[in-house]
Image (cartoon, rainbow, N blue to C red; front, top):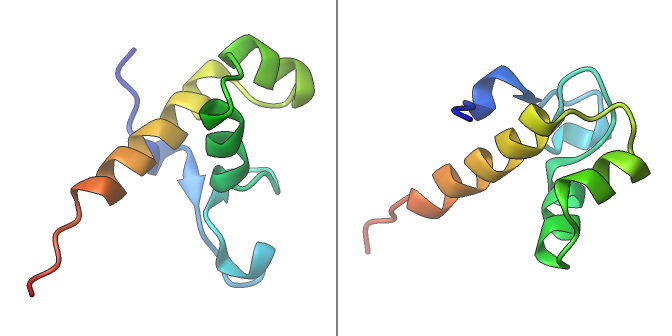
Length: 74
């Protein structure tokens, strides 16, 4: 499944104080990543948050991947 985070993740200052979240929801990307990091499957996350789709969960991973690739010049 090829998912681009920019299709599913937004950040606006008036919602969740600008924290990245799933478009159309108040579910922060960090919450989804936390569930994944603790070993939850996509199915378990969707049971907890029925409004989420597998594509949105993958978008959270793509967002994290892009952040991890960010390079800082020292």
